[in-house]
Amino acid sequence: MILSDKRILEEIENGSIVIQPFDRKCLGTNSYDVHLGKYLATYADRVLDAKKHNEIQHFEIPEDGFVLEPNTLYLGVTQEYTETHKHVPFLEGKSSTGRLGIDIHATAGKGDVGFCNTWTLEISVAQPVRVYAGMPIGQLIYFAVEGEIETFYNTKGNAKYNGKTIRPVESMMWKNNF
Image 1: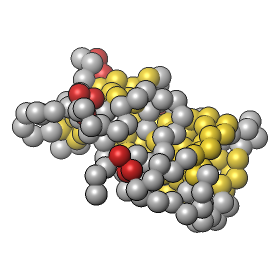
Image 2: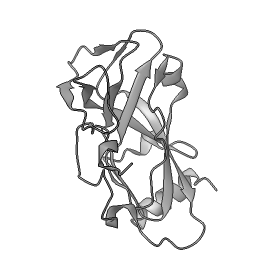
Image 3: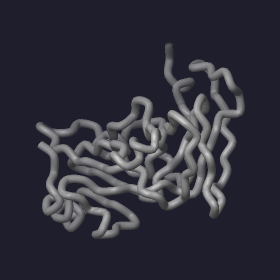
Image 4: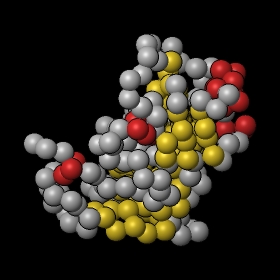
């Protein structure tokens, strides 16, 4: 079950959903619009290695925007810090973003119950497109959870993305044993 706008507001009121900053104008019928933060990052190496810590280089989006180019993976971040204590958040692109040829996540659209952070975006584009800090970039949709939660994401000892950040975070795949 997807939460409605009224239900999202109720959950914010009781503290089970946190969105900071929160702007009532960003609340849709059954979603909440999130915005591109001011930082982007790219990987330092062109060839990435899943068993290696691949370093990234952060940079700030200038006032006049930044042109994203095809064939490059950009890591972005949402302006919004979120917490979800009873629901499963899904981050999806907005149709207006998609119509510009911008994909905001390669595979990681679902958050876990207990995720408390900004969202790192895995951005790719179909053709060159100029983006701006603060532009609407996606929308959060919240699903109800069936059953009790045994371990919340923010209490997992092996959770790789618990450190609060305002910048995009690189892949931590290298921390897995395989």
